[in-house]
Length: 374
Image 1: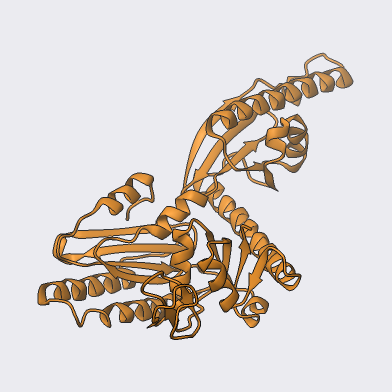
Image 2: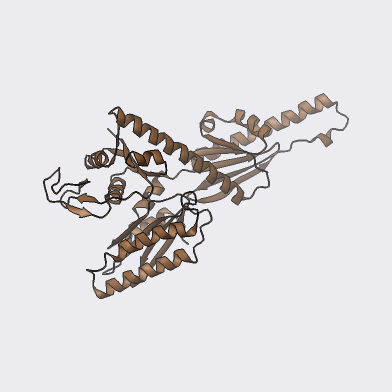
């Protein structure tokens, strides 16, 4: 499997398959939404069916290439793909020109199938733009380890140890004096770790900080952090100093998921309140499509797996729920099988952020809304 990098996205954007079309499939395999393998395989079949329906007008060689694409994508997801911590999957195939890329993602994607003259890396581009990095500082009274998780990968960046005396080193010292000596060394250690972490932040500028280790040490360590770092503390977790990178990554992903849930809940509440007050948000499909046509969408929120037919203007690209005439230019519109998918693509191309939510209350209100730029 291929790691998501900016180099990969550039490679896909520059790929030229000649006369053969490229099949692009984005598949959400998020275990929170699709707990069983067959749950996301059903969504894959829906996507592949939409691809096969589009090959009728292609030449023989192109049609055979797409048919092989469909079989290879289906076979890959059925086996050898193993979900593990993967929450999204991007697949690019052009059998006739020798293209195959399978990209696992630590974030869910919107289910989408595209058949076109080039790979469609748009969702990957947006993930790279909004991807956040998580630094974990694993600290105890004499040691520290610093990890950085970004783009679904984790690396241990630094390990340091300071000479802090333990109780058995007491010798002839009085208990109270020796304890002050130990406490002083421990405080110097925590201050040293905080300084090292600040230098690392200035070099790598991570988005969130997770403090890990014994609770009493974490509480002391947090007092030593510079304000730049204190403002980025996302969570405080208990982990042993012997934790593996995989253990730290699992905790990082848990923190990321909790952050996503909180943000999406806040977005639902804000869209609902702002739209009701007629301010910087719209709720419902028609108002959202109108805001897209006016290039006003900053963040678009869509219920998971929401689909609906609609209309598109071939002249200016405006989308609508219904209507044979474009409200912008007056041209005759044509039907699109899923105006939600078309709206998501349009929002991404306009530079908007697109999020999906599973909240039932939002789906009951239409399942689509947006926070507006102006």
